Amino acid sequence: MASRYGVVMIALIETQPIHAGPRRRHEARVRRFSTNPDLLLRLDGLAVDDHGSRVIVQSVCRDFEIVEPQLAFHARRSPYTGQTEAPRSYLVDRYGAAEVARAEERRPRPLEPTGIIRLGRTTTLMTLAHELGHHLAFALDPTKTPAHGAVWIARFDQVAESIQSMT
Image: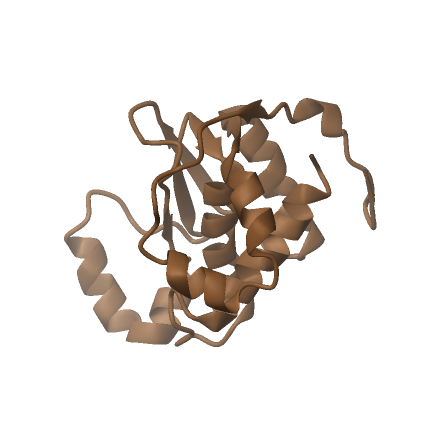
């Protein structure tokens, strides 16, 4: 695949078929606002390992010219679930430096400056697109953009199209 940064080695991404995931709690909203819900369903039937996830995150972040989040993988996390933490600067903009500092005092480690995405060792491409959609919204959209609103769904679609071009 060619991008504005040269050639990306797609051979590094090996997808494997997986059963379509359970019904998601945001499914009705996604179907309503997504420009391509069929693509999202197709991506829900393909999974990658942690190496494939890293390659996809690097490529998508490079394409959108945003900083890559930290990635954390856990073997017992379902392929259909993930979690995205906002970058520290986003939280400071939203809640104020004093509130973020108080929250960090209660944590075992400071907040990640680049944000963090938590995934399973095997993750569906739809889950990866979902979490990267959040990361894009944190990086590119106004601070108070709703977590699962129409703007996020547009980012979800953009990431899904980017991932589709890699598979």
